[in-house]
Length: 146
Length: 166
Image (tube, rainbow over all chains, first blue to last red; front, side, top):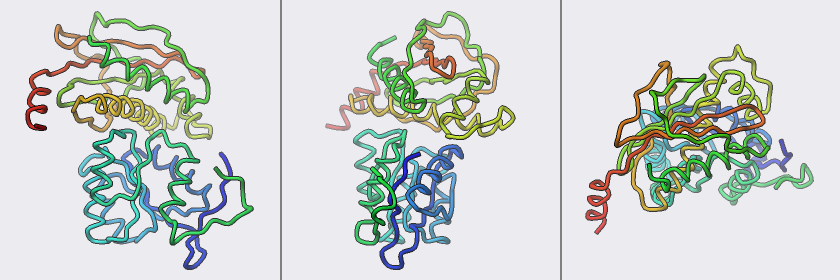
């Protein structure tokens, strides 16, 4: 996997902390591997929207990577509920279902960005930098990146 | 079966498999299913409801599934790691079908896609007159991948949706 310049929190220089939400364990592991190459730290995982909300409240991650099609509660509804309670939550939807209506619905309900599966690491990296823009820094010279 | 409903699945399987496996793929075979569906190996089923209704089964034999899982995970996955291999097949199905659904929705078809489930029974229902099944076989560097698509278009629901939309 490519090397990327680590994205750190600008406030304390610590790794960006991620909550990964996807009903597929395989997808969660792949995303975790990817964000670790960005210098990130996975602090929690959830397999559905309901657990995502409770895990967010418990862990207060810097970024949530959220699937859309999940059992119990879908990702867009979970994102809306999280943002209602935590307006500064940074939620990036990561889904294979990327039609316009879905993307608009996700953004209207508080998601910051949308990445379509299969995820290209260089695309996710740019999105993470964009979403963290005011609160994140990249360490130059640590890798070529995207 | 309407080819405009099928083409996005072919394009999407081609794109997702080629990207994930980092090698070109080809369509080995494409045929209408005459008999009831018979599972070949590890199979994930995704159902659609709405203007387009039906199911898609993504099916690979165990050896191919292990190779696919290893390529996609970037690490060697053992045949004994059943859960991870099954998860990989489901996730691949999810990505291929999700990308096809995206194209169909952007073309104006409105329907809902449900999370993939493992198809465990040996045999499925036989095609009917209004829901024919098309079987596609994709040849990849890791082995053959089968996709069985049985969909029908509900004209009445499409008209209702158009009326509601204004």
